[in-house]
Image 1 (cartoon, one colour):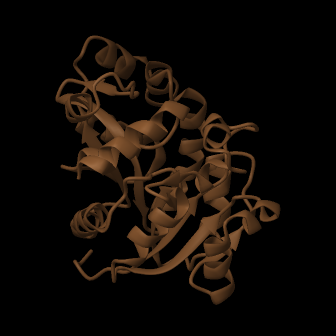
Image 2 (cartoon, helix red, strand yellow):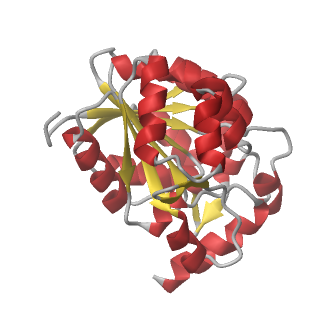
Length: 264
């Protein structure tokens, strides 16, 4: 890929469960509408994506259509054609699959989520530049867990503990045509995301899980094993931005993110 590669962006914006804790805390119909710095999270994400010339189109999957009028700015962007809205499915992976079907198979896709409240143009541009330069089918954004612990002490964040470091996902991915085959793997990963050792065992085999448990498994080894099982080449993109690893997943995250923004 070259540095001027263009992308279609897919944003997953539906709540995972009914009565989402973040939505309840913020007093809004769904988590994506929760205000951060006075702006709904989903609008902050859309603004970050729209600010780069590398994003040629934006597809929003969810929230449910009946809720859209509660975010007038979102409705305006949909009606003006700035973004394309599609209904969400029963899980993030199924929603992603549906949204990807709206994109020409030869177009690379950037996938992210509406609760990525601290997403910025700088983060998006860095990730897309690195992804465009990578010789692979899929890229996955990662941050150093130690960075997050230092910037947000006391904030619990699921980490993948490997020999070459402890990493946190960033809800940032790119896919080319072949890379879209990874969605079926993602469906299994959704079920095991809080138990990474079980995912590694089921998908990669117990030799890999023993390596993980004893601290021998590296990021490169893990991704090579996934590639061997799926036929999809994958590369991790380590992002030097602590904000890239923060999403608004719990009610207490609202105050944490607001406080971080106020310090800028």
